[in-house]
Amino acid sequence: MIYVVKRGDSLSRIAREYGTSVARLRSDNGLLADQPLVPGQALVVLIPDETYTVRPGDGLYSISARTGVSIRRLIRLNPVLVQGNVLREGEVLALGLKEEGEMLGAFSVNGYAYPHIRQGILRQAMPFLADLSVFSYGFREDGSLIPTPDERLLSEARQFGADASLVLTSIDETGHFSTQRAARLFRDRALQDRVLENLIQVMRTKGYRILDSDFEYIQEEDSEAYFGFLRHARDRLHEQGFRLHVDLAPKTYADQPGLLYRAHNYSVIGEIADQVLLMTYEWGYAYGPPMAVAPLPQVERVLRYGVSEIPPGKIQMGIPNYGYDWTLPYDKDRRAVTVGNQEAVLLASRMGAEIQFDESAQAPNFQYTLDGAAHTVWFEDARSILAKLRLADSMHLGGLGYWNLLRPFPQNWALLSQLLPDGPEKQG
Figure 1 (cartoon, helix red, strand yellow):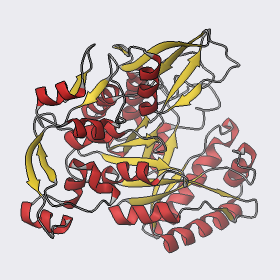
Figure 2 (cartoon, one colour):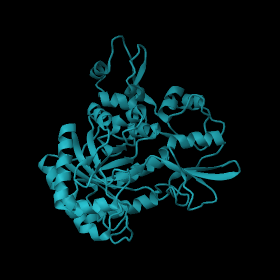
Figure 3 (cartoon, helix red, strand yellow):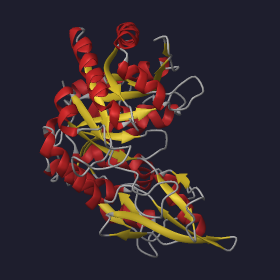
Figure 4 (cartoon, one colour):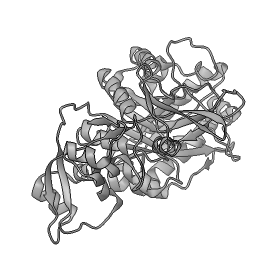
């Protein structure tokens, strides 16, 4: 369940009222030991329905065999286990949760990660992922690859039974996206063959199962060539038993103008790809006016157009794992500061702010003043995530895609542990 903090609340009072522990509330919501609660703050409250007390010599395999609860489920229900801590005699583990009445569909959960992600944060997400998308590989003009140090991420994917996805972008040697390099790839079949051959070799050698094509800002005149590249890539990948995933801009109608949208033809690419991610975020963005990053009405409009052109089971709904802090008055030339969702709550606590929840956007926000300057912050919490999950479930989508996993968001994973069946579910 989700509890919204009121003035005068304490963790000890909430724990007593709902039959859980302060330690569990802190762990599931990522709260520091001395972190005060914020009025309006959302807390995920997981109440164990059945428990197991660790015996001498117990390990996860023996507990799973004795209780009939899978190891993955044990880890989901007891997040401390995922960090590899040794089980202690007398430690109490949850085997099930009360109030599991609202169960959602068997989503395929995908998360994008950079190689420098902190291990503890990655481990929070791994028990829930069907796919771990490694960001990213580029390619040079001779067809050789610009690799990324992916060994640790691939090891985590293997350990947790997730399929590894290699994200291909047009990032060049300088670390910037190159529209020109992407256009050359789309127009040059020989270059495509060299790039795809190198990609397939890496995928075979390292154990990747999916190629994620993430090309944005494609010139309209390159649209047909882009579709041709995707078809060629799909055919080559399928020959080797691999899958093609394509990331798509958030469109609401077919002829939507703009460089971001023109070449992202939902109907054509939906037929080519095995799976697509609709990037349903960034309405509130670094240089834009303050608003929710993924307001629910806008997300819903994109998804409704998406399912009119693409089979719902192929679609992953993009979910942002971040928010923004804008200095007011808004200045289009002043960049908002990116904040993590857990970081936003801590900021509200430090600033003595009260968190509001916008019922239209289905997103939390708050205001504060620092050094005479007013600020407004929009971010995600358990309530906004639940609204998105319910929407995805009502539209029978195939999955969720988190952009990205770099920032801690433990209450998201606590929420999934209650709402999603044991898994992960894999597509393809």
